[in-house]
Image (cartoon, rainbow, N blue to C red; front, side, top):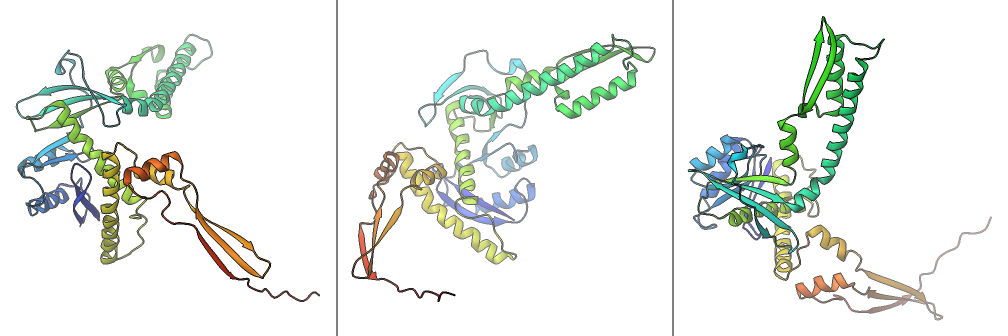
Length: 359
């Protein structure tokens, strides 16, 4: 069972429906597309479907074309010919956060446009993965060199089949063997030399760090417009992340369809409110996600100070803590009070406690 949520470019929910099956399956996607057609008044006629690479299969893209929709997807193709992309410099645009730039190269064919994007944010995110990969490659090469050096030493294993087996175990251990071309030379069943070098796949993998390719049949759009449409996908992804986490879509412990669907719909209602809050903050120049906002506001709390009086009463003084500078900013942008509740004093008789008799 999958929840299908349609949002506009600002992240506001437009349609929500629960479907059976996985959205990557053509049958489920067809049901979703048929559902969109029934909501003609909810969207503009020129609809564009944005999908990530996980469901952007050729079969699904063909189905979208057949249904008469436009699309922007992340290409599943990892490498292109060097001559495919123009030799001109990247066009650079500033993203909405005002800090990150995106480099782009656009190529149009008769039916589709391809946009090569180089993201500084994505590159920084993948830097850790790159360092881990480099370490694996270094250790893999050192292990290969050790086997190679052993071929020149006496009393070392030189049998060809055994050397091939040892190299196979190294590939399994370091998971980078596919990035190398390895050749073992032999004479009369004995290995005499090992030659290895990185292959084209390794080069493509290194060059692909921080980059991705967008594919669309919207030939009327510029590179910046295509990129903007794709970035709206992050709004949808953030929507589902928020719903699954902060708004309680998961865990879902119901065992029958009716309460499960009700649970999903309550979560979607909560997201309607959340979308309005995030939109108002974005308009005011605050680009925090919901989790960041919750963490900032979590320290602004209501506290109770209790004291006893001489006449046998208890006084509870309830006040709000002073908001921090970041909390002030969020409240000001949302145009709400910094202290939603005022000071309150409550005086009540002290409860008498019975003491147990001493033994």
